[in-house]
Amino acid sequence: MAIDRKHIFDKVMFFLKKESAFFTSSEVHMAIGVDAPRQVARDLNFPKTDYSGSVASGVWQVTMPSDFLKLDSNAKPTFQDASSIMDLTPKSQTNIGRANIMSATPGTPQNFFMKTETVMGLYPPSTSGTIVVPYVKVPTSLSSDTDTNALTENCYMAMAYYVVGECMLKDGDTRAQSYYSLYENTISRLKRQYGELFEEDIDMMPDEDYL
Image 1: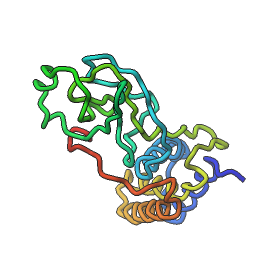
Image 2 (image 1 turned 135 degrees about the vertical axis):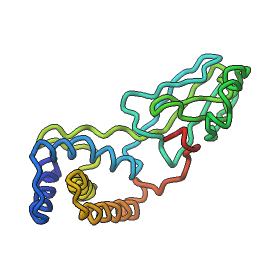
Image 3 (image 1 turned 90 degrees about the horizontal axis):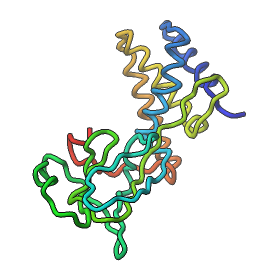
Image 4 (image 1 turned 60 degrees about the horizontal axis):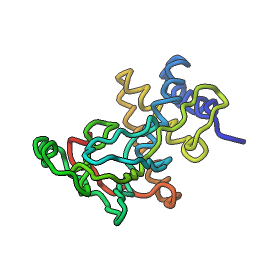
């Protein structure tokens, strides 16, 4: 039987009842449907796909697809032209300097940075070519009881613990921390158990510009 939103909802309500903490179904459904899948996807670096797009000469900003959640922590963006494929190295916009970006002669990009949460910057501005960006997708929202997504089957307990922690935190309940700890332990176990899917993260964040 598939693990769906109702299965996760029942787990959450069991824990909340156990702790004598009561929340409306709508509050719990919102956290299960949107917040929890996104957090689990960030922490597991999954589900993943690639964005591939052509860039014209002089371009230094590339807008990510609408389902972009974050960069894949285990793979670097690449730039490809007629003669080579280049791995891009993270470097902050602050360290490069906006003036340097705007005045640079187009060439093969060496560095990338996240200008905003969904716009990637290139330095130097590119010559004509193709950029490929591995990224983590926004998981499909769980809008009804029978909904599933790429995370529900293996990660439903992580989502349940996260939602309980979030609900209790909003109520100022210090017991929320114990559920966050259960969540973190479950994420660590999933990474060990499903290593081929949920790889350990490689730190690729340039610095605060990415956050």
